[in-house]
Image 1 (cartoon, helix red, strand yellow):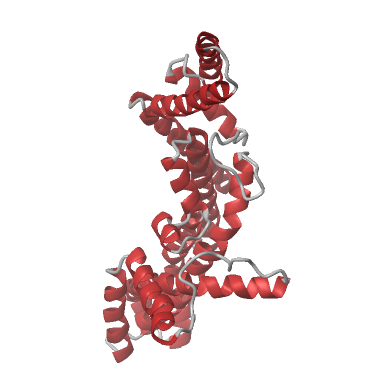
Image 2 (cartoon, rainbow, N blue to C red):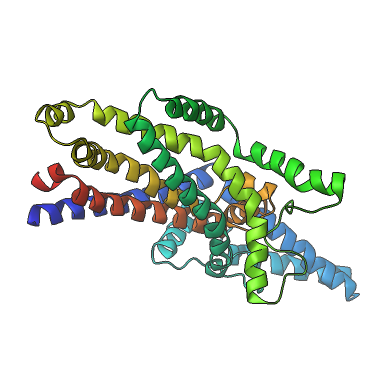
Length: 356
């Protein structure tokens, strides 16, 4: 037990080092390439121009305006940290992130007008969970179930048909499938018959329903096409990957030995094939769910869905450095937590790890 606790502690420390390493690497990349300075200078230029326009509208003397603008520029440069080199600014930013002080956005706001990055995440994260996480979970469960059946019936008609469909779906980009579905199922019926079967995008109608039940149904209506696109694209990879894992395990010597002993086929399948197959399957599932928190940038743009992916896109286009760092930190933190959960599940599912 002590050895097991020591192993998990070492894993946890390693993952924390990885988390810090990602932030340091991002800071070095943005600082050494002067991208951070360009972002801050862009913000400073915009603020100075806006301040100068305000003074001009007040009709003040040109010389006084220039002096006031110069003083304002120095104050804002000091506040933004432009007067210091990047390697002096970044450690403080990394420390704040590690203690979960995400700070404030310089350009973006939540739906209720807050510029706190924590509020931005709380505003967008539920939308991403509704779309991306739900889509991955639904697709994974169906794909894994089908993959288990295919792996136990290699060469059957169902195995051949699903394998072909899996290869086809795996080759399709999610954004392309989304555009096709919008064209065929959203705009097509509207143009041909004047009926809006599916909405082309957005999360709710405009204006949104006021009754709670009507609001939920409206969100589900808008969710239908993105979920269908996710299912079409990801079902094949889940089914085929699970099928190959189960088939590979079923060819192991210990499985043939169990059959040679005359054990019932149900026991061989459940104890000797499915259980050793669970660790790699769970690895794919949990890491996919952890990655889903970051959302799909292009897909959310295609369906105009206000999730974490579109938030990250907005932060990049607006050159909002604090939001970029904070989102990268949050995405990495969720991945680290998912990895640690996997380490615990490995211990529970694989007797060899407990014995070692």
